[in-house]
Image 1 (tube, rainbow, N blue to C red):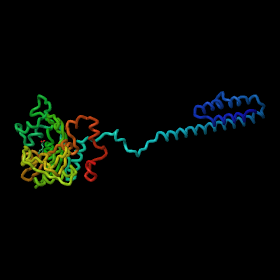
Image 2: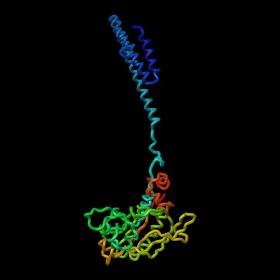
Image 3: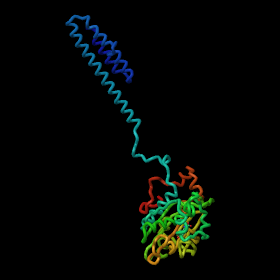
Image 4: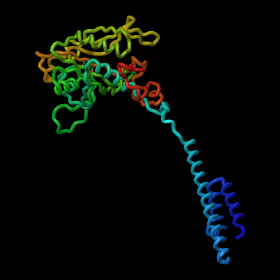
Length: 360
Ligand code: DAH
């Protein structure tokens, strides 16, 4: 039969020349489709005599197989090329660090809470927690502030709404972390060494006061804990927190209902051109309140004051953050301004530890 070689040349040439899958498909239809040239030729076999038909049949079938496998090979080559192209253009370098601009930051309050916790954990203090909606008894009475104690007025307390049927005073948003002392003593007994960081609430608002702020409470009770232990502990804390070699503290006689004696603690420092330096200079900055736990408070915590004694202290976390990181206005802490958060925030994966550095 004539024309088989021409068809072979024609279609193998077209397959080779096809530039993409759709032109290859056109070649397939033209050659092997129902009305394709090779099929039409196969149909014309009936016109031939028997011998001729056999020979032509064989050579046409060979041609069909040849063109089919050329088509299949070319199709596979296109698929390979497409995959190569995809691998070349769509790869991701999983070893690249995340884009810092796109990730969130750790808020200074969280950062400082972690720093403070790391330091006191190293000194043997466990973290304790209590509720932010607190009973009047835990927030005041148990801390030796009876209902008409004048110190209650200083706390600018938020009171919770109360059902008419309830007896007794309404619950409050805790005004300090000191009630956690009571809860921890009642739960754990003595000896005890805890810190309690958390949110507290007072109705106050200016550059250094916000209605919600943060404190960390400290409590250590044992047989013979003294104020000397307190002073050493707080100096260690200040050295570690402000990341300086030396920190000097001054205890100033003060009054808190829940401690006797009580002391406000000042830290030696200098302010040079708005820059705080800790451990040098001739200025003193108040940083916390403290004292020896009052026997009435121990009793409220179900601890026998004849057998046990200890100290407590309360520090403002936000104020610690402002001092260390040079943040001038407390109100900005809680405004969620992304520019502020990016500027003062910390890298999310750098957890503060004593061995790796607290703030670096
Ligand atoms: N609770 C006090 C306040 O909020 C701070 C404080 C002072 C806590 C003396 C103490 C302490 O544990 O001993 O102002």
